[in-house]
Image 1 (cartoon, helix red, strand yellow):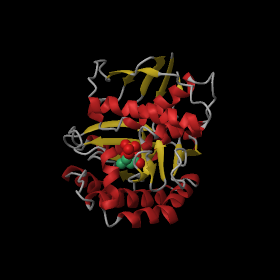
Image 2 (cartoon, protein in one colour):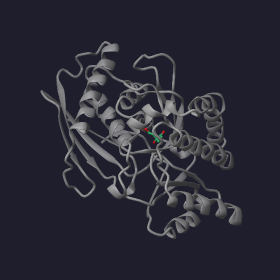
Image 3 (spheres, protein in one colour):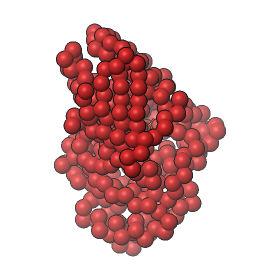
Length: 334
Ligand code: PMV
């Protein structure tokens, strides 16, 4: 048996839309910061049949739906297909038993799939190591096959997922841009609602291309945004990072809101928090940026110098749960 640990990441250039839904090959590049917490641990062993047990942050067993189990079954199948392309088709002879222990509080509203599938990819790699030693980039492919953003949580710090070309199973891979100690950015997560999101990201990705603004989004990331974001990170230029990441987050939500059917993830609370942050920036010149994924939660990223001010701001937001984390390492064996 092997045990791995991993965490979610927060995207600075968002992944939204695939060129191949089946293989989760993204339509454009994306870029994220891996988080130091909350973490997920997974035990994996060889088994005759696929079994999955999942425990929540409170230690209680979570009942998995058929849809959940099918996702893991599909992921195992795709992982085997990928291993076949590496000449290691028998590395996982039959199936696996999986035990997931998530320390991600359900109230936090952080998508756990990036943590879970990066963790599982790391664990699979350790399990099959006597047969084949996978590189981190190859592990990112296995993570991506379960959840596109999981490819990025294989690495620590600042990580790019390259869209690549073609329809090969390994044609989109993640790579580290800079390690976590290059720049300690904090993520103060402000969660306005504990509501389950209506349409999950897997389904959402397949709607992206129905938006008339999707092609322009892919073009902007490919020609400019991804590279500008990388340059801002390498230069630790917070103002530049703020401009490009907010532009990209709002652009992704514009695509979501104009797809058929439209996806409205942002709520009145989200807009109120964004407005208050913009005002705070003007009145007090505090370095802080906001970004939102497929939900109403606002991530406030800031350098250490403004942490205290943003912490206070977050705690003042009525009816919101606040969670604090920062740039952290990627998936690892425990
Ligand atoms: O990895 P998925 O399929 O859950 O998609 C993640 C989508 C966003 O969180 C909205 C953006 C991102 O890049 O993480």
